[in-house]
Length: 286
Image (cartoon, rainbow, N blue to C red; front, side, top):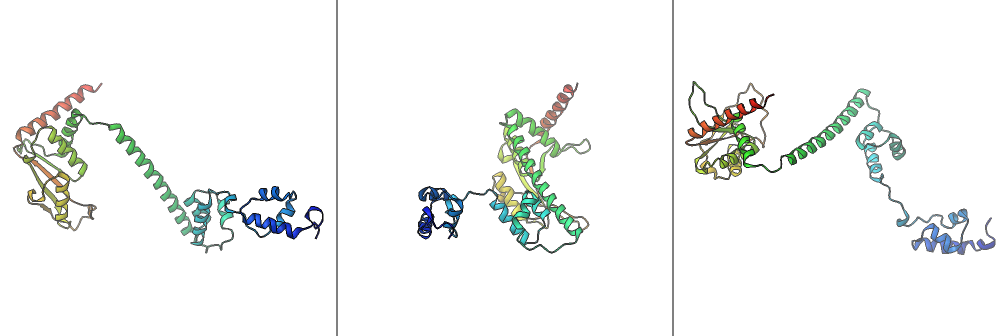
């Protein structure tokens, strides 16, 4: 043995001690200092075949990415597709998967379509995140709503969505129809601010015949906080087979109709408030 002389003469004995220290969890540096082995070649031979203890392994932040890249490669993904999916470089991907079999070659047109689809999905995810952040920031901007805020919002909301009196059809009724739960809640809060008693409110569901009518009635009753038994007869809308409806599915609950009984005086005030808002807006115009 080339080094079987001097302080390394008892190589086998030295190896036994090195292996024992390694299995006890010591690092190379600790073993080297403990046995006074200054030659790296000798140290390598002493520890040959002995894995390092777990605590000496440095964590690799890319371990998860590497595992995912290998998984996708085994599914037949190309480097371009993996890059779009994981956001890492092609050189890293090549290093991670080079021992794996190459996927079958796809038609270039199909491959381009897949890559474009992945890029578009990524773009949609980015847009969704930005959209959510913008909405959350705008929500915080509103802050606390004062009575004045609610009053003005309610007048504008009613004039946009509520029934209006016509010169050729004098009714002067306060009738409101909408399918948005948030709109309904704001409208009811506005009526409460105006002092409209709950017993003056009449509810009715307006819905297509193909929908879950009873389920919709329960939903709206829960939202407004009344028993479903107080609802008036449901207005059924017949389906026109020539039209393609998009308001279908389990989330379709039709519209809720809210009527304020003895509402002629209130209607006149609403119309007056709205006229006042229009005049005030015109005065603000430079």
